[in-house]
Length: 115
Image (cartoon, rainbow, N blue to C red; front, top):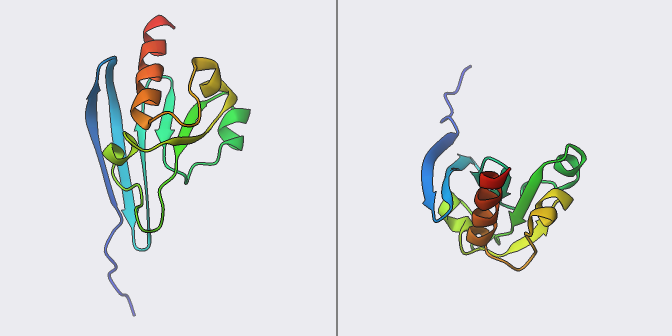
């Protein structure tokens, strides 16, 4: 017996920032979701991302964390969310816990212009 389940949903769109453009991504499935903003130098994402593995591979990742009552679902949700963790590579760019996701994206975009 085959039951047709709805497919997960994924969307992406270009987001405009002062320092340039990035790609906003949202993925949703039954019982879960995650979102991220992809820049030329790294990712600002939600708390689903683990920092250890990307750090091992030299990637700049900054994560924000939602709550069960206020989850981060769409990439725009990351803009005002507070960064709670960064890889060493993101820290080298100047991204720190406590700043907003928007600030982290702007730092990554500015650094991409000079690298």
